[in-house]
Amino acid sequence: MRSDDIKINPSLNIPALAESYAANRFVQIEDFFAPETAVLIDRQLRGVLPWRFVYYDAAAGVVQLSQAEMQALGREGMQQRMETILRQAQRNIGYCYYTFSLGVAADHEDAEGGLLSGLAAFLNSPAFLEFGSRIIRETGLTKTDAQASQFRPGHFLTRHIDQGSQNERRAAYTLGFSRNWQTDWGGQLQFIDPHTTDVTGGWIPRWNTLNLFDGRQVHSVSPVSAFAGDGRYSVVGWLRND
Image 1: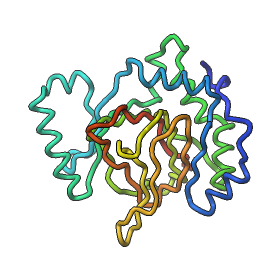
Image 2 (image 1 turned 45 degrees about the horizontal axis):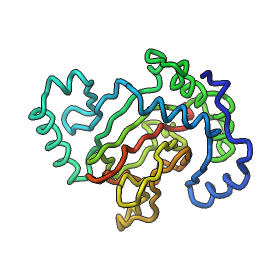
Image 3 (image 1 turned 30 degrees about the horizontal axis):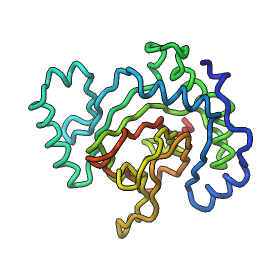
Image 4 (image 1 turned 90 degrees about the vertical axis):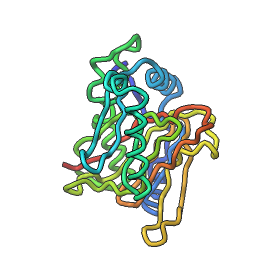
């Protein structure tokens, strides 16, 4: 599938969505893609991809482990890494989940004709950038980042902000591909009061849904429960002005 084949739902009420974003610094847009497009993306995300395990280490910075590197570490080595990750998380430092950059998706094309590379191109197309610009009411958007993410039981993202080193991240987005997600399964996008650390809003993962929000708000992804019935699949990134 080429980027030209990916279409935004034409029935979306863009002025109303922009009003909601202006009022809340967040908007959730259900049925973002045509259903058949969403099914194809979902199929690709749940297929065989070279997922990498990503986490933050206070000493080493961002660490990404390939499947081969995780196998070489073995169960004991990975358990030691997780112990460090969890100790840091107690101090509100870090994250861990599986990631796959859509920037290298062209190297892993499948029967759908390189769908994820087409999706990456679509997310950087004038159509999507214009759509995002109209929703967040900012001109000058130049590009998006795009990575697939998979949160399994125990994966999380501690509270943080996403403004970027040069304040180039104008808004964050998540494209969700989780069906029938239950509240008790965790994995919620949460917004947090910076003074009280109370959760002021939370949204469960949903199917074919675009969340756009001001990443300069404190936010997190709550840990996925041990009994979650599925992985939390999404495509995430930022609308940028570089």
